[in-house]
Amino acid sequence: MPHMEEVQVGVQSIERYRELLGDERFRELMTLADDIRRRLDGRVVWNVNSTARGGGVAEMLRPMLAYVRSMEIDARWMVISGNEEFFRFTKRIHHSLHGASGDGGPIDESRRQIYERVMEQNAHELFTLVEPGDVVLFHDPQTAGLLPHARRAGVTSIWRCHIGADVANEETRKGWDFLAPYLRCADRTIFSREEYIPSQVDRKKAVIIPPAIDAFSPKNQDMDDETVRAILVYTGIVEGPPGPGLRLFHREDGSPGRVDRRADIIRMGRAPTWDTPLVVQVSRWDTLKDHLGVMEAFAELANGRAPAEAELVLVGPNVHAVADDPEGAEVLSQMEVAWRALPHGTRNMVNLVCLPMADAEENAAIVNALQRHAAIVVQKSLKEGFGLTVTEAMWKGRPVIASKVGGIQDQVRHEQEGLLLDDPGDRDGFAEHVRRLLEDLGFADELGQRARERVREHYLVPRTLLQYAEVIRDLDEEGKHVGERPD
Image 1 (cartoon, rainbow, N blue to C red):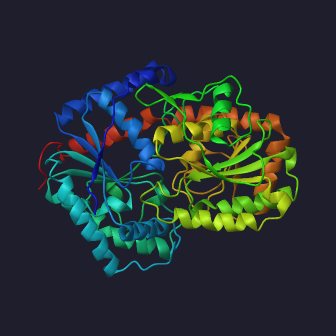
Image 2 (cartoon, rainbow, N blue to C red):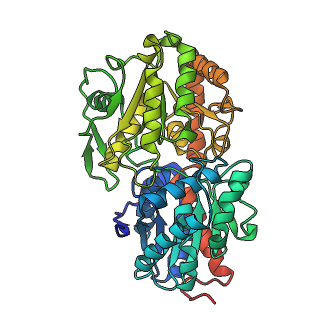
Image 3 (cartoon, rainbow, N blue to C red):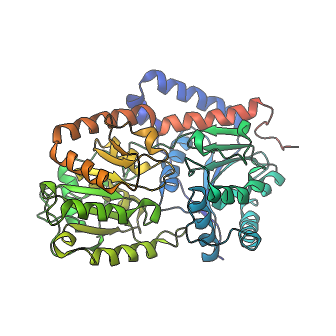
């Protein structure tokens, strides 16, 4: 089994947020940061998750830690290692916490042995670096098994769960019952929504912190139309000419970056032109994201000709580049089979796009360009933890159509910042929402403008930093002093 990976994180000044936040909110953030730095007194804040690239957790951690480090707090990031058997099982748990069965595999004591063996190997490496009194945030089911090790090591431990189900069922019970023995060792648990807190967790120790995006990351930074066009033409997503723009972006450390890799695309014939309205969904190749439902609903709407001559672009990562998601290749393969079964005229309007993942920031810049160019961004998930792709699209002022599931329903108010489907399986309703926004451009623009303002108020990184800092402060004030070995 490979070793744990320490992800190198730079430093990014939080000052860039002063104008977006306003002076009063910015001063509040800096005052609390000073307090936390004093309380830590040289101790380290660690984050531990299962991948450094691909998925919302990794994308949130990198900029968030860079800002924390700019406040002179020692924040670090470790990625656990595991074999295919481990990641296939934790993907099963991931589905279970969403209330779905995934591959239907068992959640039993034999799998617990596999899980704990990998946790034991990672704990041996991790706790040669982490010292008693350090603070460790463990992210999602893949890391929960490290919590007992953290307690024995005298570490202040916080477990952060980024997924959940709106309504409990037999599947969620299986998943939470499996994790419960480990979660009892956490000093705090953090969830994205109140509804996600399971009965197996002590609610007195549970905190709600919705995820957030970084307005200045390669995925969300401002990008003019000429740059968008240059990137999308070069990658092959839209047809040329590229125009006078350069395919450049700013990396997280402020240095210049350039998009140099192209996308792998399954399509018929030529790429859509620059003027073609694009209906875009960006997400992992995961059955819970319902790529198939989006494609089939769009096909029914188009039936040989979509409104405004629009095309559908379903976007995901290169399936060999996301270590903790072994199902990606299977889902993409199923999508290709279904795409080939579409009628010839409809198949010509559907594009399956795999983005390069060798450079995570380059990948993010391509997503940024795609979302900014989209006529509509959709996220017709069957289940969803929070839905950061929705947040990203809202920040870019794009009209959104999404399922009323998980954290999406917290972000988007129907007919105010986007359009919501009460039933994720309602393909007719989805198709009608698409038709409405393609035909009523004024309404679509109003939705996008209100969406951006909602993200500015509620879903940017500084708000998350404030809430994490408050958790650390509260633990200290309750007697769980940071820097001291627990009983």
